[in-house]
Image (cartoon, rainbow, N blue to C red; front, side, top):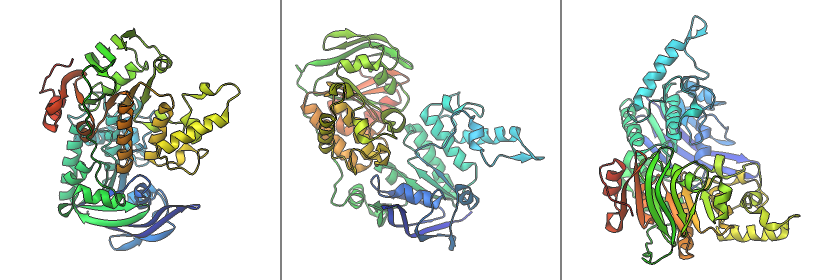
Length: 501
């Protein structure tokens, strides 16, 4: 079961673009090595080289002391290497067990043994027992599952090949805290059985919770490896982004008590969300906390007219009931999704086209393209968008820059109410710091912001108040000195109750 893997001076070029200039990584049996770096640093490229998804131009992989070169993921899997990526590889219309065993189904007498496949699938799902709903079963259709349960399927799919080395690339991004805790318990068990783990995460707390060492990539180069016991978050961030410091998001200028009430919600119900009431003032950043899937996303979708709801929604004293996002947009509301690939962008279209998706009507028929381009250019400069040109496809951008486009297209409409649905998920530390600064500027301009984040540190550092959800209901409203980790965790578990206004 023991394994040692070494990537030595690995290079990957795509035409004139260098995705990985000098990648170096070592991992041994029974240890967890965190692979860190800003978006575009080469982490995913190095991971895909190790798993045979792409071939390097230069450099060498050594497995158990011997040079290897994998021509495909299946070849890497035969050598005991598996991976779980942030972008899921599941086929939506197939069942859970069909996805898990695809290409390596158990065979009996020359035929797929579906009985054995179902039994082994149940055993794999049992690893996460108690952290998912009744709908997750071997015969469930994957597209019917929520994101966290799909992520669990992706993880157990990788485990089905009984790997010696597993790469977890942002595997916790869609999991709630209970599921993350269970995954970390599994990792601890894997270590005792001499498995090796390469762990990619943007959550510093997770790195210090689970990793033994951290290797940092910056601009395609490996720039250092540190034992976790001998480093801290500030040092690792400085390695990731030359000259950077750990962003301190907390900037809580108090919102005046007489500030204009932009939004008032009374007894709102939508999907799992039940009887939620609160208010939001201009210039305020109001956080939505709690474990994932407790109704936070449904609240934002209902407010944007993208989900049916009951209850009362009042905007600036006017009662509204939106049946379509177009109606919400006319009331100066913007919605920024967390899943930029499927909900926020047209990946095959240009940056310019994406920035103006909600706003083309402002430029007339025929289109005043010169004016539209000038507005987009000013917007891109304000957001510090790093791109070859506005005509480049948005798919060419790093994750952080792609998310800037998702946000930027709404800022061109000058929204008065901004709904943010986990907007920094999978975004690097530097892009997060810029995003936090943007939120500060929006607040100063008087925008009201409703902000759901799966990252507790963001909620604690950014928000004036935090509404915590549990089982679809408002479990607590935290404000002032109440906004701390103890109260946030307790309210997320439903053990702390405070009345929202």
